[in-house]
Image (cartoon, rainbow, N blue to C red; front, side, top):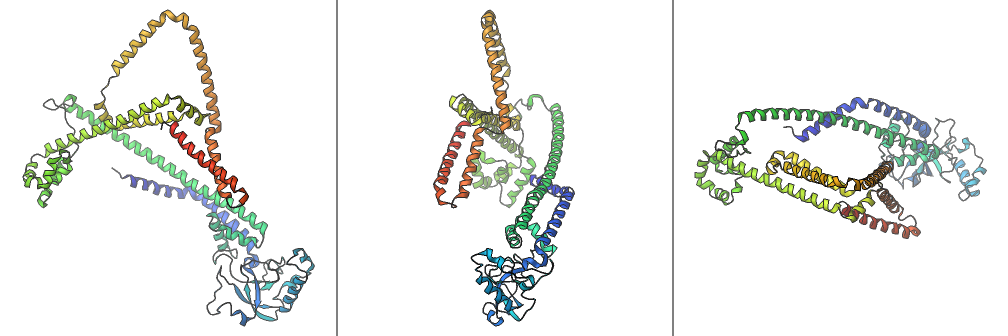
Length: 546
């Protein structure tokens, strides 16, 4: 037969192969979203190298050597120090610093309107007078420089929004996140879009974009996360899942057809064997024939291992340990000093018969014990179902539903017993001979007696029958209304309350530490949730029959 793991691996391979055809429209949509958001990201955050500007402080070239080694420094993303040699108009820069402190803009940002500076005056590299080294501030702050047009980039300037305070803003040529992520070109922008799809450090990219345009960045990343991470990825997973379900259904149908064909062949073969064999499964001497569990051919092959000093392997194959000390003696004495080994060559069929008989007896006992355990458990649950406390608890847990917990346990055990009996149908048939006929006869006689006794009381019981019919009608109407309520709510009221407790407990865990004044209330909710969960477990254990 086929190995189950290989069958499942074949299903996975077919799913992947079949998904490529169905993924065409989805991949086209993914490509369009990457193209659209990549271009929009370049337009909003990448024009003029906006994400490359950093707030910095100008130093003399010789003085800057104290902060870095010019022989080993490399302009890499997310370094502790970012610098660049730049030509500056230091006279204009000093005038800006003096005006900044004169108007006390650091404490009163509204005074920024008093700085009547033009874009040309803010461009510190337009009339450069001195070569300096611009070193970025720590932590790194993204800033903006005005230009003649949207695509024009200047080397150093005064940020119009004064994001750098009294420092300058310079073009660093270092991306804020990594060397391969950014909005300088479409390749970097597409990688950011794909990273957001998989929610890989996407908040870092949004934080960098906020330094350029807060409103646009929030809107851009909100729609990108919704459409990319939530919609497209789930659509991809749903497509693969649907294809997997189709492949599994086709495979199961094929396996069912093969099993049905095999069962039909076995049935035909059994009918042929029944015609050829003696009736009632009797042997030549009238004794019941034992079905052979083992194979004589395999026994002979294992018998040959006696030539290499293992004259007892065939007894292990026939599970000879069921003979107790005789098996131990065969092992210890090397099958009676190889004499037993020689005799076994002519007794292989008898050994197979004895081993098969013992094995069938063991299997029958195992099946019988399993059935007794299941039947005893069913009787125990049936007895508990009559307990008013368990019944009331089940009604409370299931309301407005009508299916009680103890009923689910009964159905589960009955299904388990039925399945077990079907799997061991031939063995069960030998254990439980049919006794339905006498029982049915007793039931028929009892029904006839009841009918005869009730002939003389028809007139007196007519009113009772009408009351009983009216009660049953009202009960059926009540059950119908409860089932409608159960379908409307989807689950019981108790389950909804349990979900509410779970959500409330999760909320308290998330809020712990935000405000110390709320800690007593949060702890109270946590204690209540713990007690509720323990009580829920105990109640369900009792309601399901313990």
